[in-house]
Length: 116
Length: 111
Image (tube, each protein chain N blue to C red):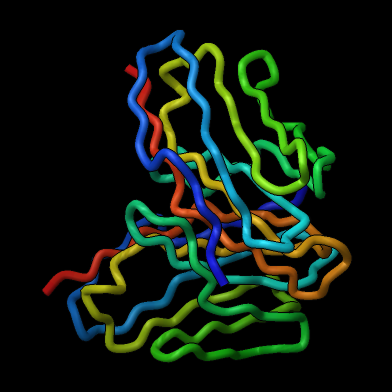
């Protein structure tokens, strides 16, 4: 099966600019996650969708970050305006969702954001 | 508080040598524990999954152990290769879609 797709792979912007990332999960996967991974750290969950509804966005900086998954398939994550500390890799992952035992997350390659 | 801690933070070993990475967790309830390998510039890829009743599981040169009583897991890499250079992340699931990530161990294998 095709994996999780993300674009762009790399993005360099100046602070206060806006940026958007796109993710297409594995077909049939109901749950979609966006993670922020700062260099040398483990991924930190930003937002989790179940189909097109938000399950957890408690760690999403809502004053500048937004995400949507309108049709319950692909998703976009936006940062507006960006700050220097937003420099990180943004990982998208998907899983089958529901009450499935051994639910596995499959990760995309990530988007490396550099804010200057 | 649900936490996953990994050690060491980084490790450098010679090609052909063995190494062991550690993961301690306080996640409850516990569903399963996965070890992921993350190559530079790529997303994490699952190596093994351990459930409550499993003590040891192997995937080629990778062997994971789990002690559910002490809430500890280890990942042993045998006869390391240059391609093993990566970050290794321990992820504990509390069931459903709740996942707790460790900060990872950065492994460098040198010739």
